[in-house]
Picture: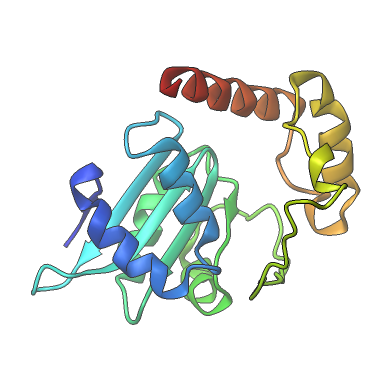
Length: 180
């Protein structure tokens, strides 16, 4: 059974995605940052007959990220994605995306393979002079940040825009203000 996830499913979702936390960084980060009720983000989960969550599909704006720990309902995930006219990107682990991609009716924006680095240990000296100069990005620095991101070959075709980054910044600032 596949259904939309809610905050009541949080523990099950985290149990699933934390098995490969580095690979599921975007799913974990987006859920932690925006929860289950944001209008630009939706999560679906596939449950087996025992009620265990075995697969998840995250929609963040126009990007879909699937994850499964084994076999999952590829056709139903594809139906969810194909029903969204705003869909532009499909990303995630190669072995999962390769199962879904042939069922996606829209032309994907790119078919690049991406690699990541995983930090196993952080040697952080709190007295480090450089660490003292770390500051939060301001809205006035977003243009420079977008140019920097677009200069990375893998992000050249990404749907990163000044408007989307400013909106993201505003949402994060609003959340921080609510928690103060």
